Image 1 (cartoon, helix red, strand yellow):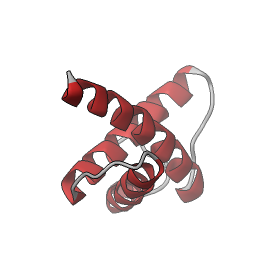
Image 2 (tube, one colour; image 1 turned 120 degrees about the horizontal axis):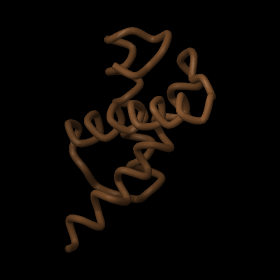
Image 3 (cartoon, rainbow, N blue to C red; image 1 turned 90 degrees about the vertical axis):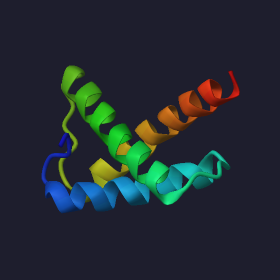
Image 4 (tube, helix red, strand yellow; image 1 turned 90 degrees about the horizontal axis):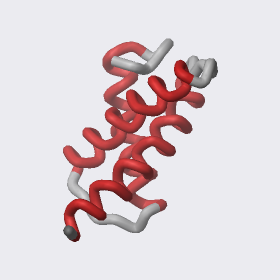
Length: 84
């Protein structure tokens, strides 16, 4: 799923938390499913990017930080596409 060391259920929980945090930081208003989707997808994107840059995101805290950063980027793109 793109999140090392947290498992499938952990990835869902991290994604949900990351989506919520990213939503608050960007002052967006999305639903629960959008938060979950953007959080998990953000974590996957950041995991891929970290591997390309020879970094590792192991464990809950590192995955959460990476997922929040990835989700913020995806929310920004989502908002831009929604306005277009």
